[in-house]
Structure formats: structure tokens, C-alpha cells
Image (tube, rainbow, N blue to C red; front, side, top):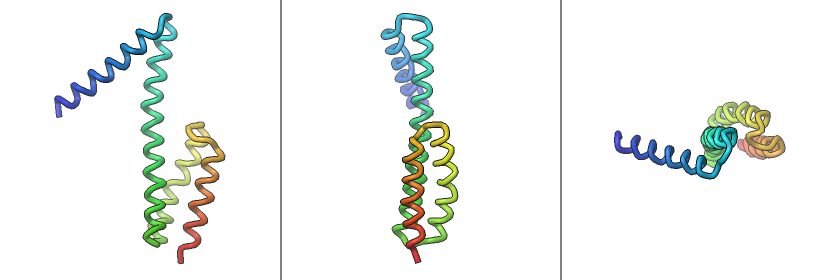
Length: 108
């Protein structure tokens, strides 16, 4: 456990050093660190979104309407929020909502 934390810390430090080597100005170094933090945060959010979509799709494949609707109720506000924050494109959010809702309605 401790070794894993140390390894991740070293990798993170090396990534920061890599940005410092590329950046010359103080502001560009700050931007490099900020973009790295933002990238980490956004990739975690996108991963969460993909997981929620998978849960809805699995419920649809199992023909479980109750579970699909519960999963859908968790997914819909997340899609709207991420589209509003421009983490995903608004048309992608609309397309995803439309397709999943159609599949949920087809379940008997």
C-alpha cells in the first residue's frame, strides 16, 4: 500500500518536472500544472459518466425496467451538468439521452 502511494507520488512528480522542462515562463509553468490537474479531474469525471451509461445499458439488456429507470434518473442530471460545464458536447448529451430513453421505453 505504502509502496504504491510512493510510486504514484514519484510518477506525479516526474510529470510535473516534464512540464517544467517544456515551459520557460513562470505563467506557462503555472498553466502546465493547472492543465495537468484539470486533465486528471476531467478524466475522472468522464470515467464516472461512462460507468453510469454502462449501468443503464446493462439494465436494458437484462430487460429490468425498474433498474433501468433508476439508473436513468441518476444519469440524466449528470449528463446535463457535464454538457453545461462543456465537459462533453451538448449534442452528445442530447443524443445519448434520446437513445437510452428510447431503449428504456421499449422494455415491456
